Image (cartoon, rainbow, N blue to C red):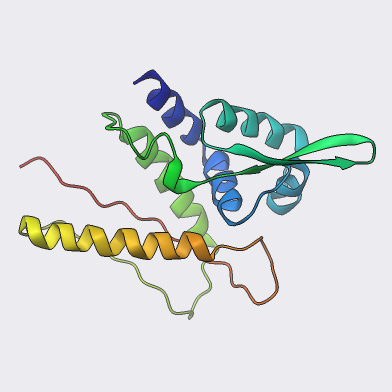
Length: 168
């Protein structure tokens, strides 16, 4: 449980959510992330260390740059230590996701096709499971299609999904 709580605290910071999103598409160094997010390299390095300590990113490669060594980190959302655990305190994550969704919505390309929904209803267990299966498939496909930021032929998109059973 402590590892899970540590991981939750690590992603409860909006900047760390942005870093994880970038590292899903490709391995990047602190300097590369800092340039993409218009932040300082020391600040990004600090947040990368916290994410690494929580097991949310791993060092994919080390490269020599100007006599020094730069680590390139990667995030695998399907092998996250948070994904496989039952966590009681989802409010911390939901709060960070809400802040990140607000930031992204401010950058939404008006007039471009998108989808947004909000719902709370009662469905059969079979309908719920079918929905979750399709949602997991769609999420997996989107993560697999992720590319390096600003790669030729790509568009910048946002996807925030929260689906869960509620107490009766």
